[in-house]
Length: 275
Image 1 (spheres, helix red, strand yellow):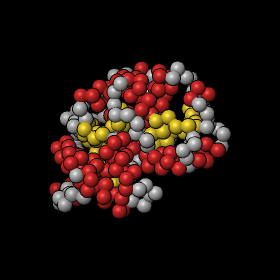
Image 2 (image 1 turned 30 degrees about the vertical axis):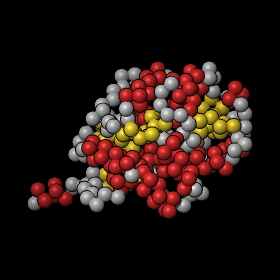
Image 3 (image 1 turned 135 degrees about the horizontal axis):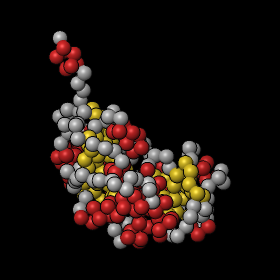
Image 4 (image 1 turned 45 degrees about the horizontal axis):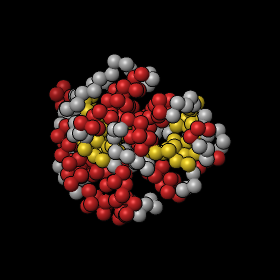
């Protein structure tokens, strides 16, 4: 009876997926596998981090800053969500020039982009700004006049940018590339060490997604309910984003984490275990 009680408490590993188009090449064959021995949840990156910390999730695509903040985890080597130039979905929107910006509204859904704007403003633009979170849509936050600029990520940033071409936009990945000469890594798979999940599961799914990206784009364009057209999705996933984690991406990631530690956004004694 005791063994039965113990067995009844066992559960499948839980993998947290983010609801952004940019992650689909890495997640499509995780979510659509015919041989799942795991369960799926859908969470924003910040929610996924909390689930990993609380042991409510065993793996997830998390923003890069989380790599240094979630204990007892490893980072899956080989695949990531990165950009070599402009990403078009991590944007600072403003009606003012960058030099005039003093207050910035942060997106509550991503710690990495919030850290990146602080790094860029301080180290690249030599600007001291005040930061606070906004809890409305992008347009309402801008019109409130509480902020000189609004940071937004993901699909809503991508779409808002297309719908508002007259706004001044700062593409954070492009600015990082101008600043450092390196790609920026936005997110990677983070897996709890006690989950029993193999890094190969995520590497193989990612490689399959990269190889069959045109097939995935076709499915997204049919199923996606956003205003994005097929050619826009194709440009975004094939030109703006990059999914392999090579030595250049590693240099970019480690430099970002170094700056985060210097600015006390993460612990100074952070460690990254790639597996």
